[in-house]
Length: 497
Image 1 (cartoon, one colour):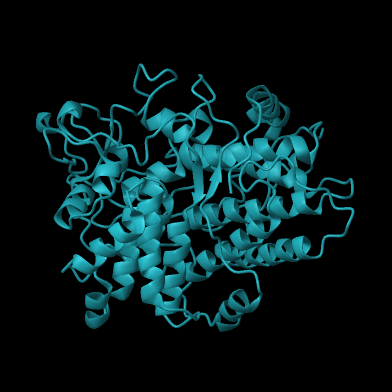
Image 2 (cartoon, rainbow, N blue to C red):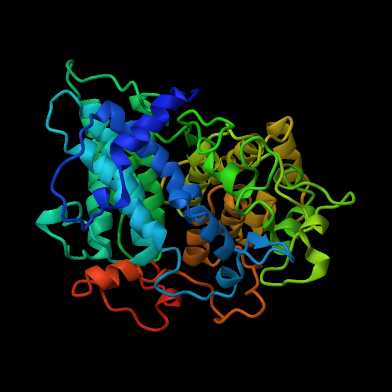
């Protein structure tokens, strides 16, 4: 379905209506005046914030996607652009990417919370969308930090030092909220207003139910190593009649080639408005040699969509290696499959990811379906997402002609490498687009198994968590959970067993 694109003047007005300032929306702020808005006005602004968090956290030039792509061994930087040395050295402190915490709460989550609690009747569809998107963001914060603020969030002046909740309890609560949202949509009465300002799924409430169900599958698979019996949950998502997403879930509020109105990924890693100058990280962001060489070694046609050639070859950069041979003009820039235009969509969940989630669950015997067919469908979806010509036939040729058991399903099946094959394909498909997901998959499964620890990294183990932000330590120190010196590497979130 084509995303609704709203007028850009309205785009800016909506952003101003909801945001006003960081202080105005602060989760711990003392102000008690509610924003003057409606769900119709707030929803597209909130959805824009969701894209910003994934690709440019409130103009901080960092994001969930960027950090994840680095820690998953996908993203590097060129030899003459020392942009990501701290990240690639695994140096993590309480200031590391704290905008991800701060702005997820103050911009995206607060906006959805406002919609969910709007007092006027007839907004069940809007409220269901808000619940789904709150679950989307809260799950990411749990994955990133462990225990977080949940039950006492958004009380503002009534509670300036909110308590932290147990991470497993939050997961259970937001999983239940996804079910509430699905049921709200199914049981909405005739007076429920149609959603007219949805810049993600265009007001298609059946698609929203499918997105919620797919998020539930993602959350369940996060927990495969915990030993918890989730048989009933898997059975429910397969038998509730909802199904899973059938298209990528993208945000597009009307991105155009004007300053402040571009797609956030394109602006940060591509070009400023008019295409004349590189964006903030545009001269730096490159593919790691591990990622690029894996594509080349396996004759993967996606390499030509992900990167541009240099002297007829595709050249990546070893992480944390700054040498003149890897200067920006000597290595591959990002390609047209991910860096297309200022107007391109901002994905929140790729169709390929949804298919690989189903393939993994089926392979583990948790849901019904053919894991091999789902795996092959996921590869074809990735080819289509990146713009490979004739994606279905090209994907079939790529998979069937490969002798690598991490690519050819029949070989993988024969050697017991099925899960690694699935996770490796998710790594290829989403490394630059859904970097946070491929990082979390690496934490959960340790696949792909060929990713080296960068030279000069301070830890022989790749990071699994971030540390609580400095702002929280300053304003809410009595409630912030203690973290040890090795907290960023100790897999302390409940499902990181």
